[in-house]
Length: 187
Image (cartoon, rainbow, N blue to C red; front, side):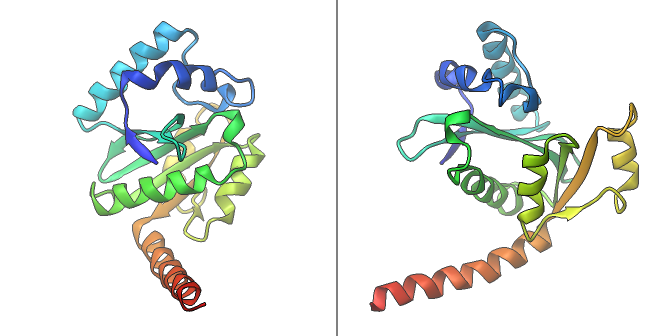
């Protein structure tokens, strides 16, 4: 489902990223294939320096379909940035990728807080974030970060995913998933 970034998937990812329904919402925009390759190189180097964590999202056949990243890592916290190619919207890949990435971040990489900044006009992403039981609106609770994000006007809403809320949700749903799968085994 996720793998470390490399140059082999650049062609597929660049083609997916440049779709007009995707491109406006990508944080690291590349306006040419060569620029995308250069940005991928910079991303790999920044991860080696501990500045960010970046993964390629794969479909069930191992084809690259998007990226998921934690940017601006400071004090065990960072900002989530994720995008999927248009053909993969609405098919459940986003949730699977986030679950895998959050597990890696919280339980392997020592991250305590994941922030999401979502453009106020990006209603689709806001609704998706607000559906998750471990996401909290942080416009008021993290006022300094919210104001810093919106220094040039009200552009973003700020959301927070604390490790403890995510863990609680995993424990609740993990038990339900286990009960459901053992019930299926009995049938």
